[in-house]
Length: 298
Image 1 (tube, one colour):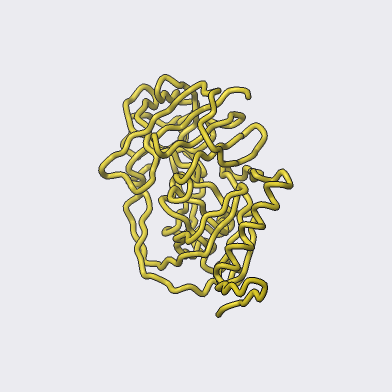
Image 2: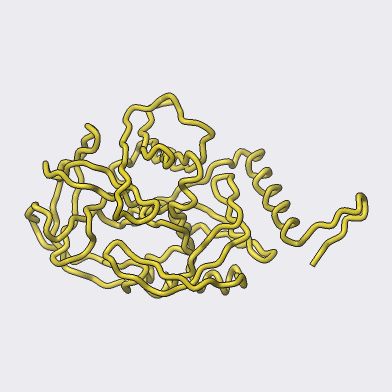
């Protein structure tokens, strides 16, 4: 379908017109002082506003989570069909979780998504029944590493804002470098560090409800608890786990204490931490140089 602008006799495709609308939308946000997104913290997860543009339609949600533990972007399949009316060609695919399980699904290429005053076009997005598996914990959209790596994304957990920076700030007070492991999933962030004085690699997963230890990690829980357990493959349920409180963590000479949940049987392959240790701080992800920068006052 083509739309004709008679003034200069220019032919514009419907998709080009949509992209123009997206650019104008973001320009309006920027000039209105909205070049950053607000963050809402709920159940230890970081939520932000996001707009999805597809097939000439735009739908917005307040329930998009920033998830460094997700390799790619995901959209809840019911929300995608009922609210966003996504009709793009679906490509069959398989995705996995950090426990080694896989599931069949499909993905589409969205015309664009917009958040933090930035537009990403032609975004690959997997359709998953998150409402069915995660239930009341389910987001509408997951912003994964495939998008986050395309810029310097800064998260201010004092002002609760999220924005993309054009360059690395000078007020860096700590640098946490991560390593690229041959067996690690695409775009995952793994630090080398210590938990309770034990050397280990640590997955940085802002999409994790709780900090977790593997079942064979050499720490003894002080008590047992029943906690919600779910991911995009396994349906939400409550499981018994061990609780290890106030455990010292060290990454690149940066130290802090955290509570951990320890699996009582085989589960995730590596310990993980969420963004809890960064509460009240301003920090930035630099995927190109594989580092998390903790920033001081401006």
